[in-house]
Image (cartoon, rainbow, N blue to C red; front, side, top):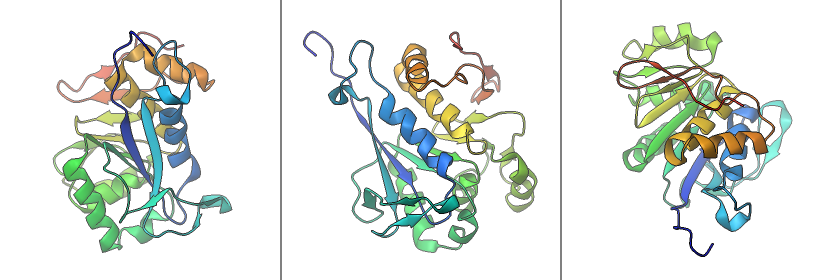
Length: 224
């Protein structure tokens, strides 16, 4: 728009795989595809380009039977600014997928932010990306994570844990809170609040977000 400073559009890559939890990836996709600057609702004004990425170019069978055709594969996607690794039953299989784990680690080397939803945190931990950091995951998997990856300081009192470069979130719907937190961090609380209102999502500003540094819980001014 004339007279308005151009805003860099970041590319968000959302990993998907068979038995991925649907809301784990669809929730953040909705947030990032909805976010716009104030006063401009056109698609050209999107602040993010969100794409789904799979290991292979084929239909992915998500949890519950939803079929999704990925935008790209781990071999042909554009450079990513933000990586989202969702969870679901499929993470148990992908924990042994060395090619995919190597890809996650390689992306982490170049991303501005690497994030996870639910048990996607296990895939980050498998390559040591959470070592020495605080993190969270689905409440039912906190104990499993603590036992399996003792170098990770698990937090069971937050929906989102922001450790700077790496952000993890609790299960399923918490991915929406994580994505809105990213929008707020990169483009301001007002933009995140407008995005939440556009989505008819009432949770923004109420989720417990633990931020790096002093270990305090973030308090957003606009929780509406």
